[in-house]
Image (cartoon, rainbow, N blue to C red; front, side, top):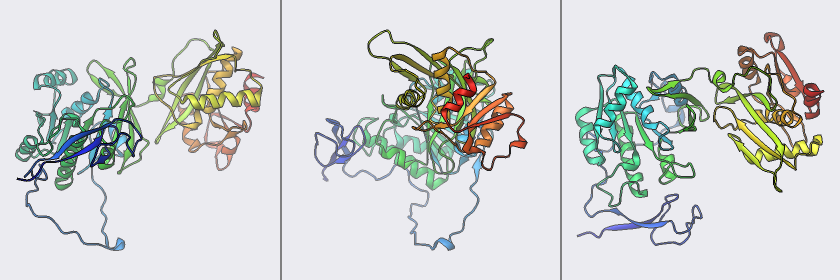
Length: 458
């Protein structure tokens, strides 16, 4: 009888070792190695078995001899999801969706399964019963697709038996951490189980050209639970994020082999499911009756989508010895850098002031074009002078106080004009190649931060 094989895995990154180690050489974490049985004696190598059972021998081919065809895609009927996926669902692709508990991952996938017409969808759930899924489905839609099938099972061997009998067009697995393979002797959710189950679904997707969605849990650090290799195995990694106290949710593309890896889709959570938000600028710009200080509008880009976002700043005298610096939806370190630029280049004494920054709508922004709007909002709050709500900003700020150019400036200006703004302030270096005649909005170019404040505050 063959000996049972075991190994030690890092629970943080999935690094495998033949013996126990105190410190992981891959991620540097301490006391994260646990022993797991990785193969039972006489176990089969895969749960999914191809129909012919024979392996195809691949031979090398010259690049110029390889024939390419246009990649066919499945329209999901969800415009936001199609945008994030790069234009639709690719046959044989494996998509991993991660997010916090209760953010709406299962609702999004069930909503997708219920609205797809003329496609057979199998929704495999290892977390909920059929009755719970039925109650959610009745809340989401009154006319579900007749080709949506629900399976409550966690053992992959049983799942593939049902798949062979049903032959679905799309497979959804909720969640990969609850799945278990009989070929690995460890608990569901462990590194080896997650890796083995993902490999089985990946093999099934590639051999049958069936799109597969895998829902994944995340750790307290916001990373998808399981080994890091999980994100390398799949074709697309999507992050579903947002504040549970806000109604808006953001579906962000982190990795996409079939499209841009910086796209996002915006949804609004309601009692009857997730609703697509086609024009996010209107919801991210708060309506107000009077001009208030500490508010500036920025023209940002998320992937190929231009958005106008309201930045809010509050500057007040520090009540304690150490001034507070807090940013919601923006990198705090970058905010500290911008505050240092204000103090060094413009003479504003903010070292004794508390500074609070908030991006309206509960979203996170990484576009450097928001720098100028943040500085204007901070000075507006510090001087208690409001900035016109019909003015927006799109420029990066350098350490020497220069206003740097940003990419795709025409899209930003067009979005501002479409939403009724009267003036947009950009870098003077963005004027090159810009056709000013086709815009009906006043465009102001500045090269130094002093020019911005002179233009706005005199």
